[in-house]
Structure formats: C-alpha cells, structure tokens
Image 1 (cartoon, rainbow, N blue to C red):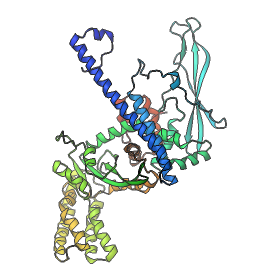
Image 2: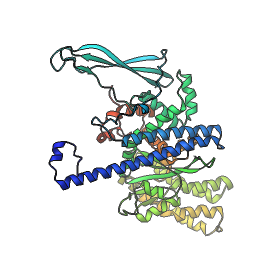
Image 3: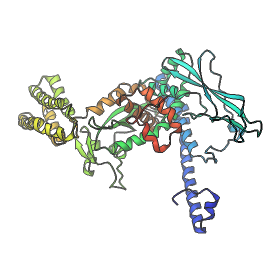
Image 4: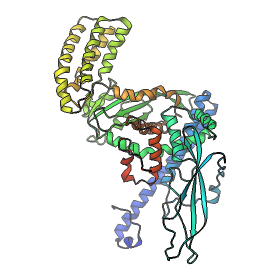
Length: 523
C-alpha cells in the first residue's frame, strides 16, 4: 500500500483483504527490522570481544590506542543505528526502558571556573489559552560544554516554567534540539573533535592532552563515541554528495593504501581509500571518499552503481584515472576512459632523474608544450572554446610527439626502462589525448591526487580498528570536511553550523547543507 495507515477511521474503510495485505506488510517490515537489529547486535558483540582481546596482542601503545578509539566509535554508531530501528511511541520516542536499564552514571557538574553563556528559552506568549496571564514559577537549567579553539566555555540553557493560576496549565519552551540529545557537547565541540581527527590528523590521545591544557579533561572513549554519532549524522549528506557526483558527466578516480589494524592477527594489513571527485571545470566541487578492505575493481563498480543483476544501471560518464587494472572492467560497460598526462610524464621524469636520458629529456619537453597549452587556456570557461583551443594548439604538438615516440621505440631494446616509459604512453595514447577533443575533460588526474595527498600524509594517525565500519565512517566524515575545504569554507565553521541545523532540518532540505550549496545560518 502506498502509505502507512494509522488512524482508526482509515482502517475502518479497508476491506478484509486489504487489512490482511496491510498486516502482512507490517509483519514483513517488523521481521526485516528485527533481522537488522540482530545483525547489528551481533556486530556489537564481536567488536567488544575484539576490543578486549586486542589488549593481549602485539600492537604497540599507539596502535592499541587507535584500535580502542575506533572500537568505541563503532559501538556508539551501532547503538545509534539500533535505536533508530526500535519501535517508537506516538511522539516518535523509543519506549521507556525498564528501571534496571536506565541506571546511567550521573554526569559531573561542569567546572565553575569555566565561562558561562546563558541562553534563555521562554514561551512565545505568556498568556494562557483561557485568557489569563501566566506566572513564572521557576526554571530548568541544563549545561553543555562548548569549545572555541583554545578555550572551553559552558552554555547554560534556561527554560522558564510558566503556570496559569486559573486553569493550572503549565507551559514551558521545548528542549532545544541538539545533535546529541541530552549529551554533554555542543555542536562546536563535536566539530572541533571531528576536524582535529580528520583534517588535522590528530589522534584522540593527543587531542586528549590538548583539551586538558585548555581547562577540561575529556577521555578518548568519550570523544570516540561522539565521532561514532558524527558519522551517523553526516551519512545523509554523504549519500546526497555521492548522488550528485554520479550525475556529473566527468569524474576523477584514484586510490591510496591505508594501514588497517587487524584484531585477531596482531598486525596490520593493507586497505584502500578510494577517491572520486568532480573536475575543475565542474560548477559542483565535491569529493567523496570510499573505504574498502582491498584494491579490487569491484569496489569501483559498487561506488559507481554497477550491479550484475541490473546491467542497465550504473554511471556511464568519462572517468579520468591512471592505468590501474581495477578500472579496466568499467570501460566495456560504457564508461569512457580519460588518461592522465601526469602519470605518463612521470615515467620519463623518473628515467631522466635516474639516468639523464636524452630521450626522456626530449619527451619532457613535449609534455611541457602540452601543459603550456593548458596553462594558456586557464581563463577559458566555455567548453567548446576549450576544445577549439586544444585542437588548434595541442593537437599538432600531440601528433608530432606520437610520431616521435613510435620512431624512438624502434631504436631501444625491449624490456629497457626507456622502452617501458615509451610503451606506457603508446598503449594509452587514445585515452591520454582524449582531452584534446573534449572540452569537459582535464588533461590529467592531478586534482584528485592533490585531494588525497593531505590524507596520505596524515594516514599514520588514523589506522583503523580492523572493521569496514570504522574506515567507512572516517571516509564519510572526510568527504564532508574536504568538500567544504575545496569550496573555500573553514571546515570547523562549516561543520559547527551544519551540526546546529541538522537536528531540525527536514530530510527534503538536506541539499541546503551540502558544502557547495551551504550558506551560513543568519544569527
């Protein structure tokens, strides 16, 4: 049935067969949710077991700390997902837990020496519905820990209680929505932890020390739980960004290895962070990272939407990439290959740097001439104008270079370093020069490689806990923050604003918060 029917009068209008159909659909939905809850609960048990078993393994102190942090974040993320699947009451709240389940440690009061900022929440009107004036009889106060770089402070949320003496109606402003309901941190503090971890590549044990020097001690396990929640909250943005990328005609793709801790084995193994981004010519500036436990081509297929059971689906644009075999299977499916001049040039640069090869020197001059054409068209924004410029200025250079490569290849022995450098370009010549005939294509894959570079430099600080979940969460957070960065936003200011607005923003308006659409909220 097209919509969930809940009102009794709507149910009364159904025939017996429609009621049976409706009941069957509800049962199927309940079974599916329960199966998913059971799967997530089992995953939680596995992570808990691995977390404690890892203490006996041969990890160094830094690796063990990183493993524990990501395990805590995994557990929090799973708890959030399980809670979202639980049945809700009429007000959208989960059912009340039994007393034994609600015993949680009482939060300690925030230090009195921290600066306070009062935020008052009062009813829009102090006149009762019966017409009498309301009387303020007290207030509820809750405190949240806030952080601006270098300094902690406290937000005091004060909600006045107003009562009508005539009809005894009690009115109070609702509790403001927060990214972590009833939690300690403000959006600003969560944003600081997310940026420090995934932009500044600071492990949580170091951030723990930074915060302690700033006036408040936060445990690594607490911050890890916040990161678990952050990953869940940002997932709708990442899903929307991926959908937008798959609507673009041209994408860059690359992948970089990442060490991943493997609990149960006592060592690390190689995983990969795959990167997909729009081109410099695209008005949508976005990058989405995808974490996978291997370099297999199936990971590129999955991200680009290819499915063996639905062969007509999947992205079929122009993919700028290197010569990695993991992309090759995409081209017979309708993806058009765009080569990377920088990769071809690098073969000759290495040859020249190592051996001062005359052939390599001549090849580098030809690549330099092709890049000079790209430099000269930097201000041309029209696609067709770029194509014409390249046809006029780059095509003659490329054709002459191609003839020269063929001629020189006949003079060098098979298997030599020079032969390998020449063969790389000749075998990929069509893909390498496709950009000359297409104004939408860039000449190389440098854009995505530059986006990966700061992540690769900091990857020693974010070894994962041996779970896809931890890697995928990091990839999601980095996707949002690095897309904000390439759009010229301060990642901290952007993330803080997004986290303040997310709790009350309808899902239908999520695109407003994407970094390339974002406008700061008016204060």
